[in-house]
Image 1 (cartoon, rainbow, N blue to C red):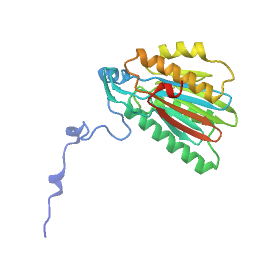
Image 2 (image 1 turned 180 degrees about the vertical axis):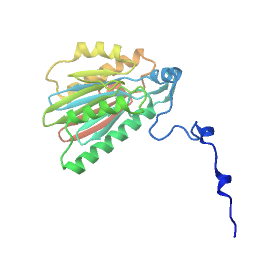
Image 3 (image 1 turned 120 degrees about the vertical axis):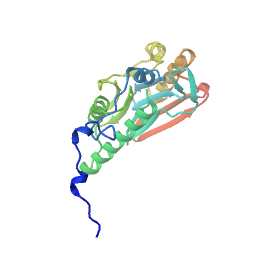
Image 4 (image 1 turned 90 degrees about the vertical axis):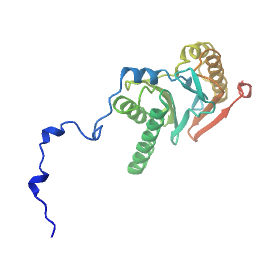
Length: 238
């Protein structure tokens, strides 16, 4: 019978202070300042507007590498994450997609356990907590949703800050888009009116921001659900 000497398997644990596999469970990989700069340079323009009907969200359709090279011309940057809520993708594509998957899972779990939809206040707080504590590099999404308390638009900053407003803009084209919104926004707009204003703001950003372009996606959020449509030609909605 084969036997081995147990003593021969002993080793000095001090020789193994550095883990063989990194990162360890519960740790996040170290990210250099250079890596963060590359992520921060990812461009886009996303807009959220509250209306009398619900919420309108608009985004451009371009994915770029640091705003210098167009990697995709037909990216849907707004996704449904709740029966009556949608979220935009801003920043690192991988980080934003992971962020959306995580929120969807939490929303489904909440509804399964409690038998009722998650409120927008709870969903926005959860999104802020995820942005602050998760490995979602340089995301700055917009959350728009409808619940029993009303119609809501939130911007979620990379540090986890949550700010609610009647309308908001995020992404590299925000300075141009904000100028259009400040001029054209008014209280009491319908979804159809807000879609035209939001598309106009995205079009203005596309004219000057190299990280934005190639059309517009428009999402309508009401108490009946979320509808998302893409338009390659701005004339279809303006």
